[in-house]
Image (cartoon, rainbow, N blue to C red; front, side):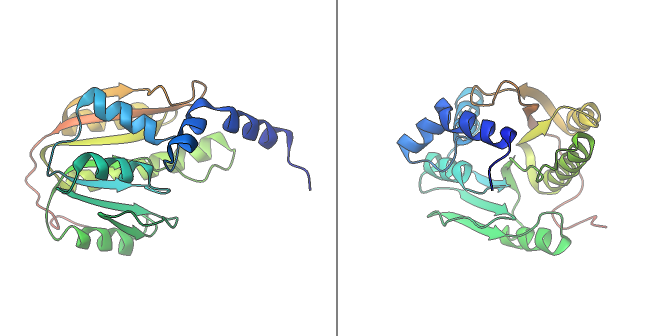
Length: 216
């Protein structure tokens, strides 16, 4: 069966992409690593000994980069619904972040310890129905923010991929209520036509709730 014109066009664009070629040449897991690399360097996100949670981690490029930058110190916990080849020094678990049991299992890995940085590159499987896809994407973003509210240390940071559309402005207002500073980033490795942007929220405001408390 022949590919549709749109999928064939996407494949041509993908394999001619400079960042795809760079990833293949350098042996990294995905072109997305260059997005995080730019943000780490620009905003100095990582410090020795940090505890980092990577949501939507597969195929593992972000976790791999964070582990390399942290060296032998610090903790990296990664989660994805898809399987991921193991990375030395990264604690990976496979599961659907939308399921309560999976979220609880992730929290158990943290052993009650709050974290310094939460990364979320999560995105739903796109159906092609713009509004439905946007709703699914914002649902995942809300879950990631809820997780950050519970598990980030005061002063911690949250980096999340968002798609511009319904619910985007309200989400930014929520971020600004919870963090001292929120800045928008469009890394060079993000395709120009993509609606994706990254929100970097820094300076998590102190909250009364501790990990494991005030759970519905």
